[in-house]
Structure formats: C-alpha cells, structure tokens
Amino acid sequence: MPTLLITGANRGIGLALLRTFAAEGWRIHACCRQPDKAKELKALAGDIRLHRVDVTDGLRVAGLARDLADEAIDLLISNAGVYGPRTGFGETDYDDWLKVLAVNTLAPLRFVERFVEHVERSERKLVVNVSSRMGSISQSSGGAYIYRSSKAALNAVTKGLSTDLAARGITVVAVHPGWVQTDMGGAGADIPAETSAAGLRRVIDGLTPQDSGRFLSYDGEEIPW
Image 1 (spheres, rainbow, N blue to C red):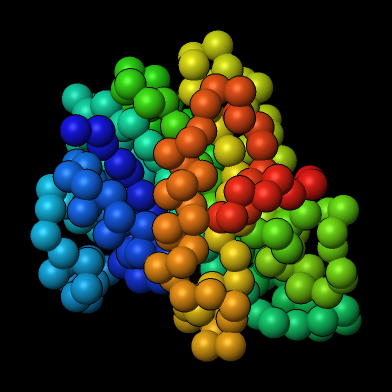
Image 2: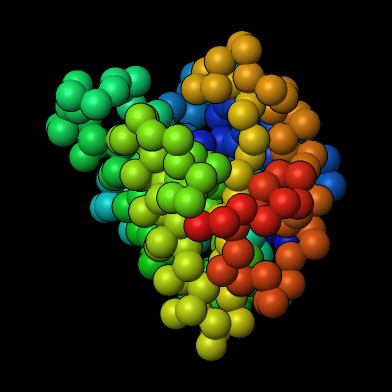
C-alpha cells in the first residue's frame, strides 16, 4: 500500500484526512507536537506511526527524514498551521508574525527539502500544501495581514516547487480546505472537518502531473493566486 506523511495530524482537518487514508490501508507517518496527548489519533486502527515533531524544529525534521531514510513517501501533506493574533491595521505584532511564518510557510518548504528523495522514489510522487483562500492576493478583502501573508507566501513556495521538482516527476499543489469547523475556524464555520477531508481526498485522488502548480479548493474549484 502507498505511504502518507502528514503534519498537524492530531486534530481538525489533519485528523479527518488521516482517517480517510487509514480506512483504506495506507501506511501513515503522523506528525504532531504532543503525540502522547493525541487521544483520538492514538485510538485509530491501521498502519499508523506517530512522530513527535515540532515543524519549526529543523533538527527534528532532519532527524525524522534520516529515521525514515528507507521509506518511499507517496504523499506528503503539510497541514500544520496557525492563525496567529486576530489583529487589524495598526495592531500588528511583528514577533508573532515571524512565528506564524515559521509554521505556515517555512515548515512546508523544510519538509519538502528534507523528504524530496523519499517522495521521488515513490509511485505517486505527490506534495500537497494546505493553504487557504485567504492567501489569494487577487481575492484579498483586507485585514488579517499575518495569516493572509503566510498563506500567500506558502502559495509562492508551492508554485516555485512545482517548477523546481518537475524534472523529478513530483506533483505539487496548494489546497484550500474551506472554512472548517475546527479550533481555528470556529464553531460558526461553513463545513465540518469530515466534509473538507472528503473533498480534499477527491481532489488528491484525481491529481495528475498536469495539475502541478495549481491552487485548488476542496470542492475542486481552481482559486486564482
């Protein structure tokens, strides 16, 4: 069976996505900061290995790549993300901005750089970065500068990777999971995590090399950069 490596696997969209792959027998490497507290994740049946990883810790990510040196990773999903302070113009906390960028933008690139060889020797060769429609510059409605900029930067990273990794046969896309009822999205969001995960699975399962460099919503809509 194919192999998945996913970050932010202990709750929300990450956990819902992981469930869909576990149900189909995928081998899964699930990354989160505190696996000992990930009760729902630990209760899942399937070929699941939990890894204690802070995605901003470059040494730990490199160590995981070494630990999995013999693994082929068919699908790498960078899902871990934070919103940061919900401030408006004139209230920006620049130290918090750097922390958000470290998780939402730097970490996904770090994972691709460390695991590119694992992905390249797999059959499916897929990299999926969980972004947000809020990272679309052309659709920006203002405000939320910290979160929006981190996802816009992730989109730029994704587009660049799609070019740089084309010769290796690796498909790289950014996806918008929708406004989801998670800790980040809140109870008043549009859709539950299960609906988002089901849509994202349909998108992921349908990806071809010709899709590399696209920005796709969970419902299949293409989102402008």
